[in-house]
Structures are given as C-alpha cells and as structure tokens.
Length: 299
Image (cartoon, rainbow, N blue to C red; front, top):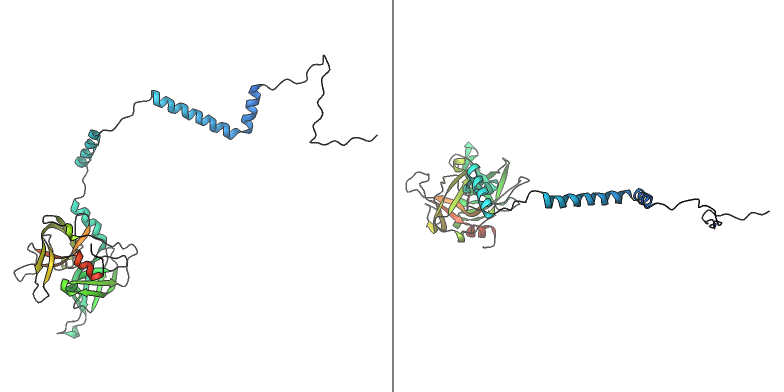
C-alpha cells in the first residue's frame, strides 16, 4: 500500500476527544508563561528590573532622605572670604608678568670694535625683545641692534638662535627681527592699546637689565604723550612715562598692563647725570606706534 508523504512543517490535524475521554494536558499557568518570556528576553527583564529598583530608590531618597542644602549669597561670600584668608594667591602684577613671560627674549648684539678690529668679534650690547607673531617675529629697540654685525636671541626655554633684521623705525627707536629657529611651543604676546591707559594705572616691565633675567619690575603710568630727546638720537614723541624700574638691558622689553597685554616697548630712561641707572623715570613707545613698524593694523 502506498504511504502518504509527511512534511515536518505541516501540523497534525487536531483530534476531537470522544465524550468521556479525559484531557491529556492542562492549560499553561500564567506563572509559567511569565517565566518562559523572561527566559527568552533575559536582558530586557534585567533592564526593567533595574529601572524599577532605581526608581524606587530615587523616590525613597526624595521623600525620606535628608533635605538638600540651598546655597545662599551669604554662604558663597563666606566661602570666598575663607579662601582669601587661608590661601596665598599670586599678586596682580605677578599674574600679569606670568602671562607675558613666555614671549620675552634676550637680544644680544655682537660685532667688532672699529678701533681694534683685530680683537675679533665680541658682545657689544644686550637688550630685550617680545615675540609678537607665532612665526617668531620679535619687536625690540632700534638702538639695541643698530650697530650689530650679528644678533642672537635666547627664548624662555633657553633655546638660542641667530636672528636677522626685518625692518626698522629709527624715529620711534623700534626694530623688527626674526630668529632662524624657534621653540615648538612658542607663545606670542597679546597686544593691548595704550588708549585706555591713565596716569596711576599699574604696569609691569619684563626684560633683561644688565643681561640679568628675565627680570620683573612693577610701577604705575606716570604720564602719557611724553616727548624725549636722547643725546645724539632722533627726538621721540607720544611716549608712555612710567616708574617701574628699568635699566640698560630692559630696552626692547614689553611694558604690560595687569591683563598681561603689551601696551608699550621700553625704550629709554631719564637720568640727568652721566650714570646709566634708573632714577624713577622711564619711557616706552606705545603699541600703536610699534604696530605700524610691523604692519599691525591700529587698534
């Protein structure tokens, strides 16, 4: 006898029990159905359980936990006064100097003595400078580099490099020089405007007096729009007068405000005697005039 083909996917026809015949299986209880679903969807079940527990804990903390403290202005003022009384904070002038410090360089001028050329090359002057462009462009004084046959600059990290003159502005005693190599993390100074300065404003001078440094001195703006006529040099006008200590070697260094912005370039000191030392009156070219020397747009 030929048998009919059987397919695994084809359900067997349900058999209707005869009257009086007992059922062979009982309906699946709800608990077993939940357990079977949880087994198939274990990750979702754990997520729902975690959310439920977290929500319960949040509700309990909101209703039974300690009350949250709300800070008042009085609390904030007390905390600030406590900090000021127990922690030593840097002075405003120290913070201003720290902002410009990485941009200040020492400029050394080398040459031969015309009266004794056989003596060979030697250091004929030292001054300061400030980096004003990321590529290493440096602003300094014209009189620092005017007689040099060779220039060398030293950066904040001790790196030394030969440098060459790009442009000069003798009428304002300014010069722009550029080193042959620069540090990888060289930081240019932030330029500021002298138009906001007033007599009495605090300023900081950073440079290499007598080659020592970088050294920091602080003082105030003594006057604005001053004129100065150095002996044997071109008269200068529109200068900032200040009383922060400056000496030979400070020339070309930055004069900065308390925000660390360069507002002037230290260029001269006044001493009615023959001594080349500071007696309380220094002059700086404004950044407006210095900016024109390097093509920086006016403020």
